[in-house]
Image 1: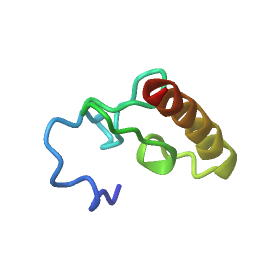
Image 2 (image 1 turned 180 degrees about the vertical axis):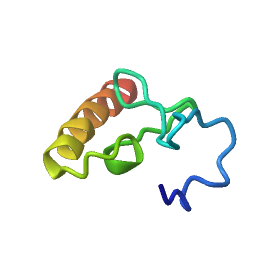
Image 3 (image 1 turned 90 degrees about the horizontal axis):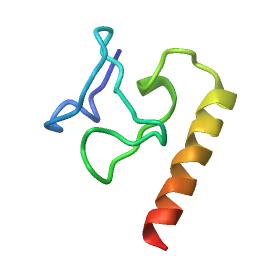
Length: 65
C-alpha cells in the first residue's frame, strides 16, 4: 500500500497489511481524522468508499453541530 500522505502522521493504527484502522464511524486513532476507501481496505470499489464517506460525513456533521 502506498501511504505517502499518511507516512509522517504519528499514532495511526494499521493492520498487518498496512491499511489504516478505523472505528465504526470511519474515525482514525488520531482525533479529528477520518479515512475511507483504499487506505482502509483494498476493495478498490467506489461504492464502498462512498458509503464509508457518508458515514464519516454524518459523524463529522454531528460533532460540529
